[in-house]
Length: 151
Image (cartoon, rainbow, N blue to C red; front, side, top):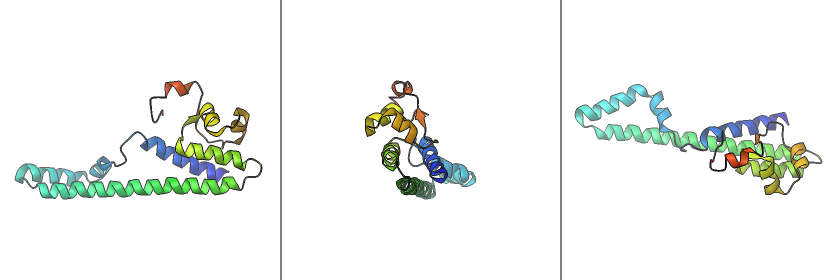
């Protein structure tokens, strides 16, 4: 369970960092290529060379899209691998798979939301879920209802 738990933690971390933010993050590319960023802006200011700026900006978007696609693939692969490990868990595999399916769609949840989504009882959820699962207290449900990412 340790390997699966660490993969789920990676997926949760990626979700918590990216859920409420744009899928493409060209600002990171601009920061990593700061010198070229300023050179291209100065070329626009000094000589009106918008074409170079547009090429640079398009490259930033392309790179950001590749990073987003790779992140999505890593998260999907982590869930697939977790699912394969969970299927091999005797006795509670069905409950674990139900919980994992809900957490894949909603990585930060409460016991109450898991109970509502799966039909499992609170004791079953508490005894079945992986120890690294990020569950908010049920009292946090109403406080975070307006936010896609309460963290």
